[in-house]
Length: 134
Image (tube, rainbow, N blue to C red):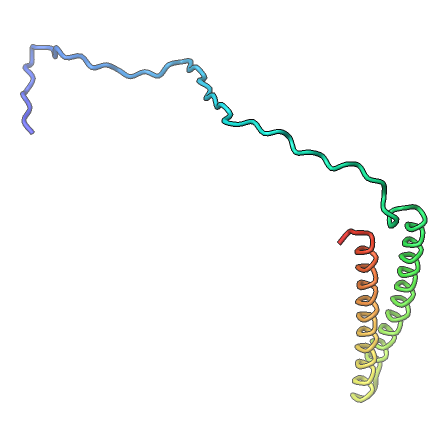
């Protein structure tokens, strides 16, 4: 690239423009026009409660739920006590045979508690399906 050397006594005749940004910029909104207008969806008509949601049915369902929870609580207390006693017996066992026997008893109690919880879960699920919640 060839350039002409500037002469020492001569000032450059070309001027450069300095780009400056504006202190204030105006907002230019984009206007979007709708191509089509749809009506709002129709609401479902109000219906009377089904027999499963009436007070008599709810009382029956609440009674079944309370009975289920009371049974579950009693089973939990009984089986937790049995598992704790078996664990304590395993810790205090003098021979390996007694320790293994107590450990098996603890596992059986825990398995029975798992079975009770599984049965309770199934019954609660059935109550929820009956109410239309699942």
